[in-house]
Image (cartoon, rainbow, N blue to C red; front, side, top):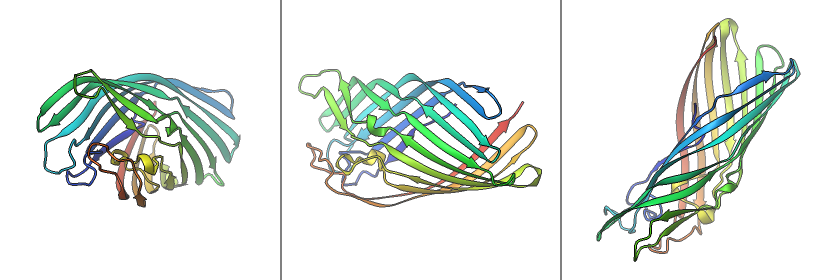
Length: 292
């Protein structure tokens, strides 16, 4: 069970784009039983279904002025099945190739919208179909000696499925029924390199670098997903015993400033998402594994 996608963004109320985005949250969980088959000493395959559940909470101000309690909110959940598959080819004792595939899913979110203004509030049942992308990862592992492992991956995600998402609301006289969210995202790549040094008594140390391309064009930029090119550096250590495996790692992420200009105008408030965006993150990972 894991989370292939996730989002949590909160912006202060006094930004120049509060009527475009103030808060966004996406939680996406996947349960994935897998069957693997070692065909021979060189080739293995694996596949399994995925059962996917997601919750979304998107908010934006109605007026461009800070300090108000006005908000438009979409809150909903959905689930959809999918599958994944993988192949491992040991071309040589020192050289291995792998490929994995995760299928696309379509989350038909069902929930409600809340519209709060100085004149009152309205809650309506609402739905929206969010397509989530297919993903392909191709990797190679090279072991010059038993003590070293060098790995390189190319990771492609088909974010171009996300074009215009329409939040459809139950009709009420005088209020719009549809709230379109124009995204027009583009497919993007991760380029990942890692190196591991294996030490005596089951210990190892590792380091890695990732470059992540942005997927969001300037014209449809939204602070809900303040996307930009990003660099990640990681370092970690681990111990693999007879049954118990323990790994701990730290990751530093940095995205140089991205200047957005010419983004779409909110027709009601006149606000844009134009500006300079930067990215900085720190992450810790602790993993336990038990072999029977």
